[in-house]
Length: 320
Image 1 (tube, helix red, strand yellow):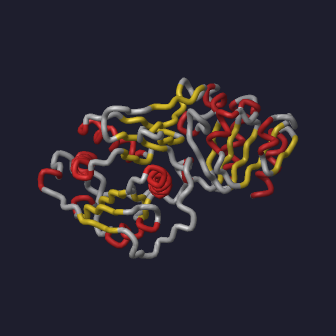
Image 2 (cartoon, helix red, strand yellow):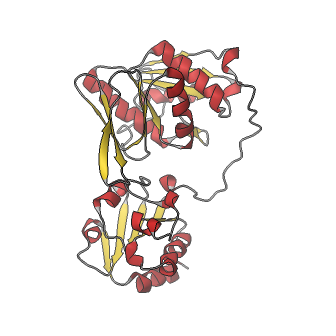
Image 3 (tube, helix red, strand yellow):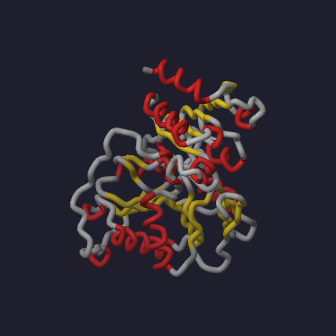
């Protein structure tokens, strides 16, 4: 389980819910691994989010993320529990920790999955985009155990009605840190809080996304201006990234990020399946396109037929 800003990361709660679903179909138990300092009460709350058991390693040495120390503890936990499947979020921390753990355990790792399927033999299939998002591949680990996969945020819902009050159902078990877990070669001085601005597409409440229909880099700049006016983030489709109008870390879709903003404004976006797969959990969707027949217009809650170069400045002025 990953924590962000002192609370459980959304993707960890989403994975608990998915694990509960997989466990129900196979009869397996869901165990949450929680590492940190002074997290006892928070750990108990995971029993209401899908965990049958919570194994907690609570120590001052785990207050800040040290990749080598965390990898050592997680590997010992896995060796003791002997799970068939291990899931982590495809976050900055998860992408750093998961390959370290997989390498130490001598097993495989399927990264950045967008769906999971469990067959009758207990083999977990991880669905992930490949070849630039043009196809979806299913990756399996039929021999080695545990089967390890990281999953993108916002592809699964949290457990419906999950409450974070303490529950009596399930068990919380301590797991002791030992001296050999602690890595002294890397010293983490302090954790610096992020500035109070949205710097991640996965957590943005408002996203303004531009596509090839924006025409050129200068016009695409209207996405940045509108996003700034609305307190959100600008993003782009794969063609917009390939044109060099926006960086790849801001790409939405199969080969980019999966988002779930409260408001998504798509400007000059055709609405190809490779793009819409990354925005299925968006709240209100607004599309601006000169082509009324563009697929994106049919999928939007509100469709504005018009030239984005004329429509977007009007919206920006209204928000000033």
